[in-house]
Picture 1 (tube, rainbow, N blue to C red):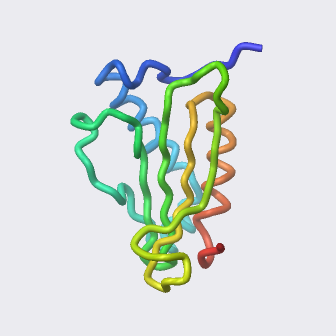
Picture 2 (cartoon, rainbow, N blue to C red):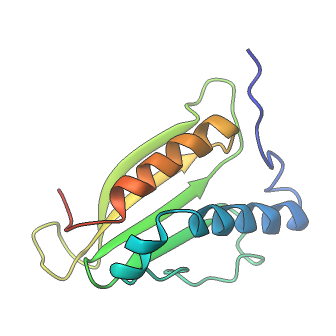
Length: 133
C-alpha cells in the first residue's frame, strides 16, 4: 500500500519548506478554537528563522502559559524502514517536577494524510487541562 506523503521534499526546497510550515499553521487553526482561546495558546512558541535552519526541528510550535504546556512538531522525510509517527512527552525549562517547567508534547513524523489525522487527535487531546506526566 502506497502512502500519500505531503511535502516529502521539504528539506530540499525552500518553497516546499515554507508550504510545510503553512500546512502546520493551517492545521493548528482548525484545532479546537475554544480551548486554544481559553488556555491562551500562542503560536509560534519557539521563534527561529525557518529559512536559515531548514531541518524540520521544529517545524511547528505552540505554547500555553496558562497551563504550562507546549507542542513541538518535528517533520522528517519518509524513510522505508522508519516509523511515520513517533510521540513522546518532554519538559522544557526544568525537570518534570519543576512547577515552572513546560510540559511538552513532541510529535515527530513523516507528513502524510494518515499522520495528519493522528496528529490532529493528539493535539486535540493535549491542548486542554493541566499538564499530565
